[in-house]
Amino acid sequence: MELNSKHRNILSLCQEIERGKYNFEHPLQRPSGQWSSLQKSLLLDSILRNYSIDPITVITSIISSDTNEEESLNNAVIDGVQRMTLLFDFVKGGFRLSKKIDNRPFAIDGVEFLPSEVLWGKKYDELDELIKSKINTYEMSI
Image (spheres, rainbow, N blue to C red):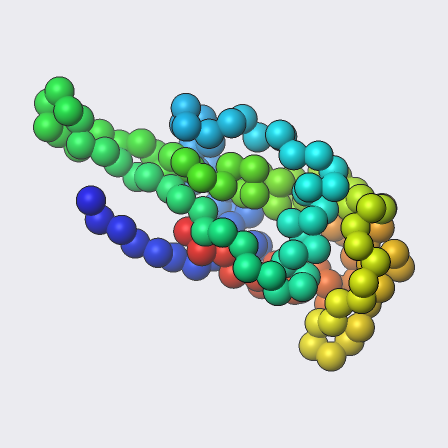
């Protein structure tokens, strides 16, 4: 088994998802859309606060036990379906951030923001440009 780690910023990851690069139908994963509004919002909050986020695991192929041949799995996501699909959904305007996010301030490039003023109830397109840039350039490990 070969193990490779790549980093993708969220904007690039969303573009790859839009092009159909990833297979979200692997039986080890729950279907997308399992997280509550607060859980989705907390992932974005974690990104804005530079918290560590677990890597996403993708399998490209396996060796068949029957034929001993390589079988393609078309970039099957076996850990991270919720994270990937909700980030894509958010960037595409699919949901508003929860008003239950902790209201402790966070900073980006020395500028302090209060979640109740800049995040609560907002969709991606309604965010301050500095906040959108932080989300877009955040690197995910795959």
